[in-house]
Length: 417
Image (cartoon, rainbow, N blue to C red):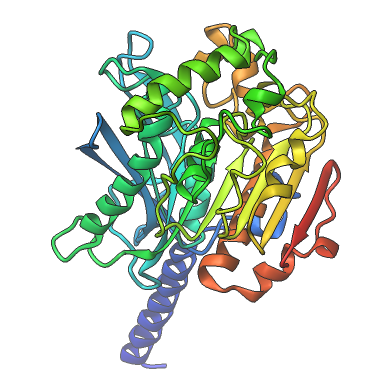
């Protein structure tokens, strides 16, 4: 072989090798949190980017975190440290995550459906980042803000009033996503705001329910306030007053905030947003409602709950299926994590050791479940559901059929799958 031919041959081999390396670096490894992760818990085909924006809703200043499919031409490791407001514990709070900060968006599969993640009472925009990151890897744009009740919001806000402002802030988030994806926006053309889901944990689940059309019921005969007036939340969840006292306080403040006089005797007016196409309540909250409150929720719903959820009255036999049974949705599913407590859906203690140092190990762990196993299952169910209802993915739809779900420790029922 001549020198020239040898040179050309070597160049071809090098180029092919570089191409192979580039191809390997262009797609993330399809892995879950554990080796036994179910299929929709595996990292999706997209790299995950994350950007933040300072903003102000109609009620309070906030920071908007957005996770999205991203470009990663150099094959960089998805590694990020989320920096939370220093006002919470007197110094900067750090939470490790798996994303590429300010990475260029990957528009090849866009525009992508919008998923709004709503944190729990006194929560933070990053506190369940594992789910936001995972959904972005599967081809969704996920937005999370701090609501008025968050520990990170510096203005003095009555938490009770956030019952009213939270669903309004969901509408604000959809409007803000419209700005981001507009021609002059930071994520121009990336977000499909015609396809919207709300995912939320605890108080965030309440937010999702309200955004989808659930209606308050405080005085009605089937309301929780009337049926269980003496129930108290466990002290670690902030529950000191009986439900009857809380209901009276909510009623008075919220009627004033909403400009309603007299206070509604039964169902309150809806506060939802017709642009919401599906919801995923995690550890759903039902205490502000009655049996008729959910009839106007007709969008597809996936409910995930723990059977030993102390924060949500698991001692009542009807709690686990109360929301599911009373939904107006033709397409709905309920997965119950047997013996799981309220915070099985939250961030693991390994990522937030400062919570343990504060003496609140319960807030980042579960007495029974391995958190990585639980989070793999949460990712699996949520991803399959959203791929089905927002993207029409037939394989994901089939994965949620009752005869297709068989996981140890999960009790499952569904309609419309």
